[in-house]
Length: 318
Image (cartoon, rainbow, N blue to C red; front, side):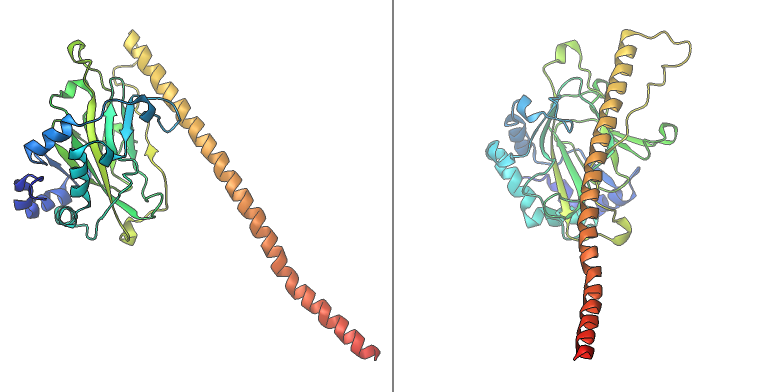
């Protein structure tokens, strides 16, 4: 582990834990030098090219974000990275940084892996799914490592941590520019809202994309006060920009923004409708099944009573 993690993190683990626990808008750490420079550069060089086949969004459409969960197949550096993530020494270090014991590594990298976001891509504020879909572990931490040698906040794509995206005027936002070897470690909870604004690159930087590696950590148990029913990822659609007000003359960019927001809301409504239909079908099937068994169980006392009555009648007849 010491050959790959920047030594300053290990030496300052106690003070970093205090930063994590007191950070706003929710517990997190921003580590500007996460890996040794040589190891990080190897990951940057081996980062996979954009693959449209890996860019399907939750609506089944090809989008501007390609995800590769098969880290160990991407090259020697990613094999070493996987070894680091699974090592007990590293998991214990993350526990010391966050105060969360008995952390578990996800060998499937569900939802994680390499994330390659092209121009035009954004990510609405959201909280993540809270249980591992296969293992039923509690999701506890997100680790994001950025691999962009150059990036400017003005280009969009900066990670934003939100206090309350439902109420923009009351929201507190921490912005993290996705620079090379900068990592963000944050608690996954029902209030860990995060996302990023639309990527708009300058004319001479259109070849760039927002590149990162995402890893999620779990535990078998979680404090009851922090436990919620199982759910998927929840999104909050972004509001209209503040400058779109009465008397403002809409530009073509304004019109495109409004159309994009309306289209996204339509997609979200359609997705929620389809999920409602699916859940209703499941509940109806469960109701029919349980109703059948309840009726069968209730029949047993009646059958026993009839059997006893018939037996008594037969005895009286003899």
